[in-house]
Image (cartoon, rainbow, N blue to C red; front, side, top):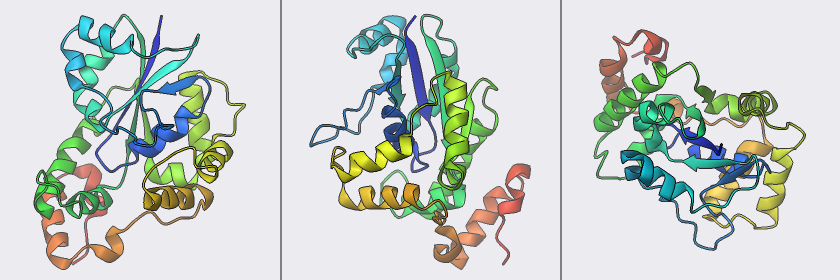
Length: 237
């Protein structure tokens, strides 16, 4: 039975970083080909979940070695968790990577995307997706972005155990080597930022502390004040 690994999460929460890392393991093969000069980051067509045949036709395009996971990363997989978990024809695993939504909302807002024209729309989007993550099936592995940066070895071993794959590989070393040898073409700023994140375990990935305006803090508090699990993230005004 073919094995599929889905990565999901809120946009700008580290899904691409986790995809690149896991793709370096010989038992995992991402659908994104990072060896190309132009990397197609429109990872998968979400209509593949509309029928078993569409899913089969999509998956068959990717050659796999025996016992390899096909890694299908897309933040929007978060909206299809129920369908993914109901797939019986493949051995499916799901990893959700999540991040402090105060950081995510700022990142989405500064992206200048029409989907999030203002900070309020970014916060509402993050809360909607956060609730999905909070209530997801216990068979799904949840990975905290900050833990991935600060406690890399522990988190990556938890992932190995969840996937039941070999832990005899230093992905961090391989990742750094591939970047140094320019095997992963990508925007230089992104490469340098991710290199810093993984080489310096104490890298401070939070931006909300210094960049959130007073007006944004008021908006944030308005939307999270009644969410019990987020009460400790309220800003003190």
